[in-house]
Length: 142
Image 1 (cartoon, rainbow, N blue to C red):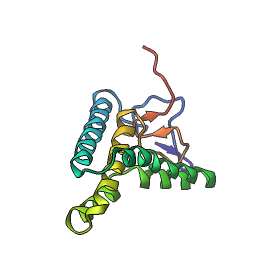
Image 2 (cartoon, helix red, strand yellow):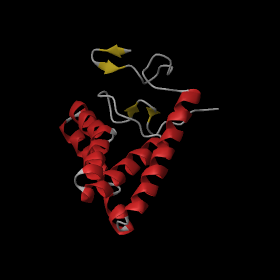
Image 3 (tube, rainbow, N blue to C red):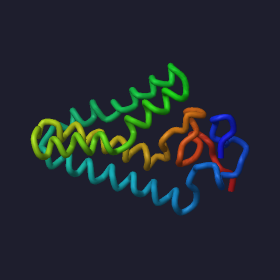
């Protein structure tokens, strides 16, 4: 549901707002945890340094700087850095042609999995806290 290009989220029920809820929300968060675990295990199998893993783990969050240009650009930058197609493509390229790329792709996928497991979803252009997994920082009563 949108009003003037904004996703109608604040002050509304989640039904029809574009945010998942209930069992589907928890399933998507469990999927994020599974992605984190699988990417970390695959990273370990590459033999790459865990120091490199730690150093690069938060790198995708640099995309949040896009919000300095406004919520629309910020959401585009954040979602590009927090969706799986790019790191999967880089991982496949690493697997077949450039093995040095594989650890970087796996760290990136692990970061995405961690964010999803923690409840940080892909962003709507309305505001940073408006995500497909609910509002960031909002606690539900009950």
